[in-house]
Each structure stands twice: as structure tokens, then as C-alpha cells.
Image (cartoon, rainbow over all chains, first blue to last red; front, side, top):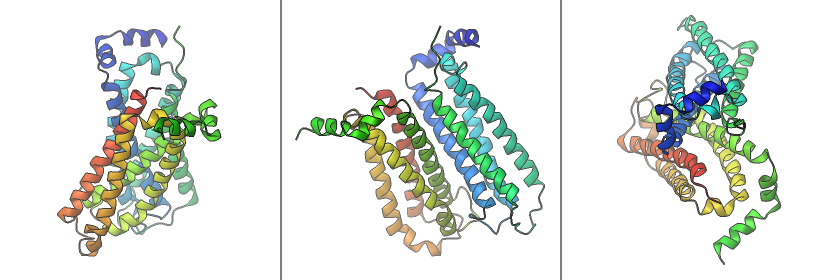
Length: 164
Length: 165
């Protein structure tokens, strides 16, 4: 991993990103804005599950409102994240916080897909369901997972391994 | 009184020094600050997009605002407290940082814009509450709000890259 990162750091694309000083801060800003979209969309779905937002609408309606935004924002996050990894590969790739973040991200993507599929199958004219405590638990756990991803992301900066 | 002296005095507060010395306090504050701002921006985006007629069209504006804005306020307070604590640990450095000052100016602008929206276009909301798109003045205020918050997030990120001390 260290070897790959060192190799990547010397490629022309990486050098361009490193030397155009405005790229990394700008891409980081885009990354933060996309995180805002994800966490707030997840938050709105959680609020619905707890009956605190739009309680009269079926859950499938809430999912259709917000899940597309999660996917679009994830696209932006992968793109902006890739630019940051290409620009600073040694800072990110061997970094334990980065690796943990990627692992958790895969889990979160999986949960989003399962949620979308399961809820998508619910009838749109189904009466609003008083949501089971199990669903509420998973909702909170998912929100915590996304928060953990944000925290791991911030901690990349604090866990940069010394270069050998 | 010289501003530098006053700000250095703030940096000498016991709490400020705690944050300076601690290996984990500042990172924790920064992390809380980032989470808070993503929630502020995200929730503001949801309401602004509704007024702009770009999302959540089936929901009345007042209902959406009532459900979402309390979270905006909670997140904002978290951002303000974490931000304030980070500030005092390096008051002199931050105060004379251009991006920081611009960010504070934009925060004031955001507050002013919000106040004007509430005493202005929002007063008549019940006549356009269920319309997919709000009156022009309301849309202008919400469009401006998004622009201002985008600037705030952007400048906030640039502080880290431009801080000298």
C-alpha cells in the first residue's frame, strides 16, 4: 500500500493537484457540502421513522424523497474523495482512519441499498405504520454509522503515519 | 487598548490553555464543529430548496420549517460553542485571519437575511404555504441564504490553510 501510494504521488495528475494550491481546499469544501446532503437526508428519514416529520406519509414516500439525494451526494463524495486521494495518496491510503472510514462507508452504502429496496416494495397506499422498535433501532444505528464515518474522515488528518 | 494584548489575554485564560495543551481537545472540538456545520447547511438546504420550489413540493412550507428548523438551531448552537472554544485557544491568530473575519461577516449576513425573511415575505406564508413555488422575494431570500452558507463553509475550510501563528 505504501509503495502504491508513493508511486501514485509521483504521477502527473497527482503533481498537478499538489501544485495547484486551491484544488485540495476547494475539493474538501465540496466534500463537506456533499456530506451535509447525506447526513441531513439520513436525518430526515430517521425523523420520519420516529414520526417527527411528515408522519402521515408512507415511509416509501419519504424514502423516494431523500434516498436519491443520498446516492447523488455519494457520487460527489466518491469523486471529490478520489481527487483528494490522488492528490495526497501517502496521507490517505495507508492511514488507519481512512481505511476504517472506507470499511464503514461500504457498510453504510449496503444499508442504504437494502433500505431502498425493502421500503420500495412497500405499497404507496399503505396506511402510515407505527414503526416497530427494531426499525427505530436500525435507523439510529445507521445515523451513528454515518456520524462515525464523518468522525473518521476528520481524524485522517490526525493519524497521518510518518513517512519512512 | 491594543487589540493584540486583549486577544493574547483571551489566549491566556485557563480554558484556552487547556485546549492549547491538550492533544485531543482541539481535534474533538473541530470534529463536533464539522458535524454541526453539515447539519446546519443540510437542514437549511432542505428548507431553502422547498421555498425555491426545487424539492419537497408536496409538503407545506410551514410544516417542513416547523419540523426541520429546530434541528438547524441546535446544530448552529453546537457549531457556535465548538467554534467559540476553538477561537479562544488562538484568539489572536484567528481574529487577524482574513478568511475568519469574512466568515464572521457572512454569518452576520446570514442572520440578517434570515431576520428580514421572517419579518418580510414569511409573514404572508399562509397564502403560499402549499404552493410548489413561493413568491419571488421569498425565493430571493432563500437563494441568497444558500449562497451565504456556501461561502461560510468554504471560508471556514480555508481558515485552516491560511492560519499563521
